[in-house]
Length: 447
Image 1: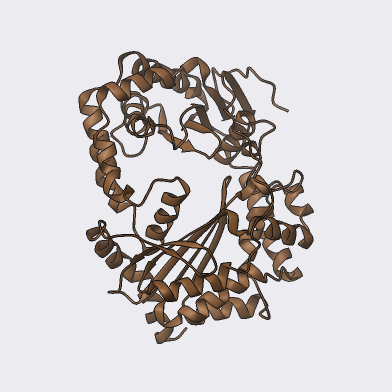
Image 2 (image 1 turned 180 degrees about the vertical axis):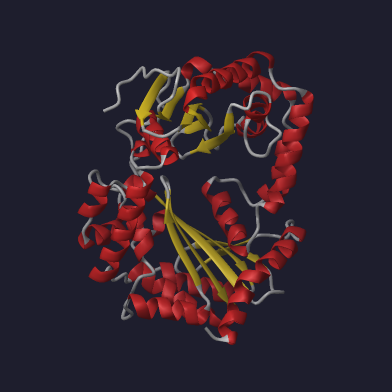
């Protein structure tokens, strides 16, 4: 590996922090909305001080487009797009990415298929050439397909023995039976093994379409040049793709499921119906979740479950605002002998917060954490572009960066406590425990 190569890689990776400082300091700068000659819309935050560009994009759909029996298809596609395209086989494509210090990544989620590109401005043209080939001319040659499938199958076999993964997967399946959200994004050994190159091409033809595409870029580039490069990559894609037919849903409630695993520690996953991102109470839910168990050590669950009683190694909650369902999920890991007691304490905490609310001090701590940590979450140029994509996907508007902390600070104690009484219903919890927990009995047979 040459010194020049290392220096260029360091420039791409290391200047992210500097870009963060500059970008955050100019957060009020206008986000430009570009309409390309090909009819595409791009949000651009220009930063001419650093010679690099990050572009993120998303196609709505994601794993919800995986056919039944082919679960894991979108995930496999995401792992293969940089494994050969156009006239370049896998090795040639990867070598060229390395030579140019171009970072190209893809991933599949339940609601979207994500992509990102980071490059020095000197390499813009060739970097976008490579991305255009990846999306428009993927090869899916036998060698990389077999190799990547093998890697995924090894990962699935490992995760099948991991109580944490087993519990989360079982929770999703139980929460959303007969719905795309209940199916594993990364598939099963059987479904991944069954995927053919024709399946991969069919997914690409149906998922990569302009009617579901969202794009954002950050960096040292003029709008006209970006518009041309974006059209080079995306304008040749089909105008519309496979129908997006995922229905709105709500998770199953009021069940306890034990997945027997011969391990000394149990993983507990539990959840409740909550709010989608466009709900007017979403910011109150964000503050409630933080006070309850959402990140950091200063939360009600951490205090009661771990600090006061030493029951679990961890206890946390998070909001999951999918496009078609909103949930509040939590997890804890503990000894088998203390699993039942841990669940009862969590239920007691939920019941107490629902009845008595949180305190003014907890509200202040939660708001301070959420407003203070927000800029720190943007730890790279790619993260900034990713946020601009998310803002478009959620219809948050270009003023979101200026307004977001104000929305958090405007949440009152009455807002949070009213919402807690509405959402936190311990009897409605869907609970999954992977292990051999004492004091926990399944209410639902495990197939």
